[in-house]
Length: 331
Image (cartoon, rainbow, N blue to C red):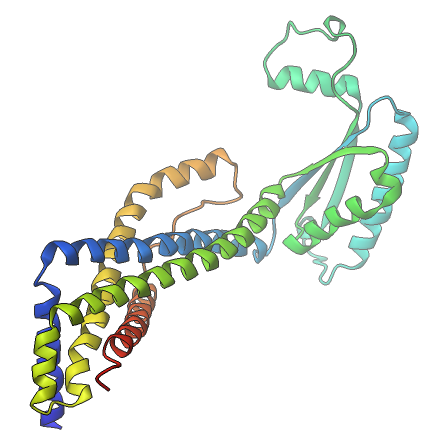
């Protein structure tokens, strides 16, 4: 056991000595490996932050109040369309109220409530005029009213799934879709965020694979260069009877230590990126009107351990391939 520890400690010392024998070359390699760890790591943190925001909204008990706006196609019969959609919404309301899992009889205001109102073109014009603070604006100044008839649907005390199902029911009805121009909702950002997260996960997988291959290649070439530089030393060691493990062990540790140091640099890069991006991302979240505060996740101990574990794994692969291919004529 003591000999075993001595052999490995000697191999580690030799690997560190070789690692810092050419500091500039080593630094450039470590910087490249640091970037290879930092870029996928940053994408992972962004995806993790988005999932946390999405899950917090999805699993909250109530959304309190959500609004859906239905804009009708112009140049259509407003009275007929109003009746069609009102009847449709009435049926939907009865369906969802009937399917309530729990009803609070003591506090009926906490139960699911679905209401709507029809907003004709002229009324919509007045609402927009007030919101834009343009009291002098007159409808007669336009060739025709630029705004369509619309419905404003308010869902109170409904959970996330109910709100999404309600939207799906509106979109899936063929008769309703023929007279609707556009449907907007307060929860639209959640659907957009979900799609962004799906694309982000694919991008993370692709980039991680590319960077992992690149990192293995960097370690492979670094060890191959070390084998060439220490060719005479290797031959002398083999001539005096050194075993394969004794010769190869320092190169294995060289690859692992290079990868670990690269991962540590990547962690430092990530921490710097988080400090610079935290505030701008929060401001962007407010501008995009997300349903909560989008905060960039920080580096937890688990993430750091995973990165170091991946570094050891990839370093081992690069070292194993390089050593066995570079020294195969000797063993």
